[in-house]
Length: 304
Image (cartoon, rainbow, N blue to C red; front, side, top):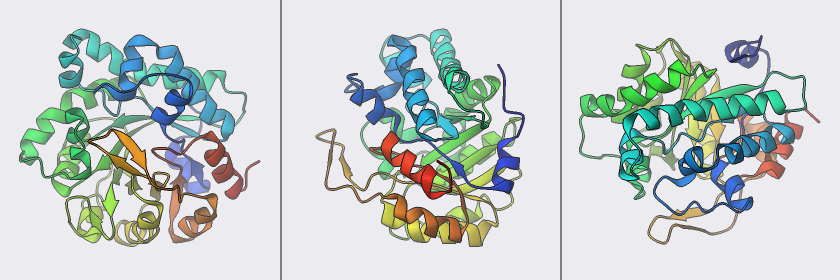
């Protein structure tokens, strides 16, 4: 499986890298039903070509990094749908392969990267718990949950692991514990509300966990309101000294009960300049941020 000649770490040292937008909204726009508990991960089993096409749409819009459709892909979640352990492992690896396939199909000479998504424990529950954290599990229990799929994803040779939408420091500690045993870099991004993690911890304390983690090449936030990302970028850069990753939602709010988005979008590419000035080097969008907005982000960083 080919990888870019320029590593993502080197790319971050030389400029701004554009991350893709929301996988689920792109699949939904193509007519796919994502209403079950596997969310976009269901398409890994049912229609992996659709996943590759979604990645390709973002590359064509100007993204440099595709985040795989493995956010909600877990052995436990697949088992509830009758998918056994061996097949589930294959689907996790397929998530990386689908994104890599899109890099080969993209009509661009710039380096393109694959970030294997490692969603939080709450994503597996499919009840909105990733926006609360504090699951009642110990760090050791969370580490045991994350390790098997992180090992499978790492073995599929992504360019980076995206430890994303992390709601609290216990889960971050567990993820970083597993990462120490893997030969692949990662970024760590929290989901935040105001100046706290979703579980209510100070951002300074949350980001500090990754400050000395050798395998972590960027720290930041995702799946949050754009306005909450503004201050978080500055805090992450100041506390860790690492490049910052930021990819917030559109600004709408997810209603876990109704399984629908409400409100008005507030994400615009006008925020990109401020994020870059504060230390952001990986910039994109999360839920409800589509290719048009990613194209505007790419233009804002001087491309296109």
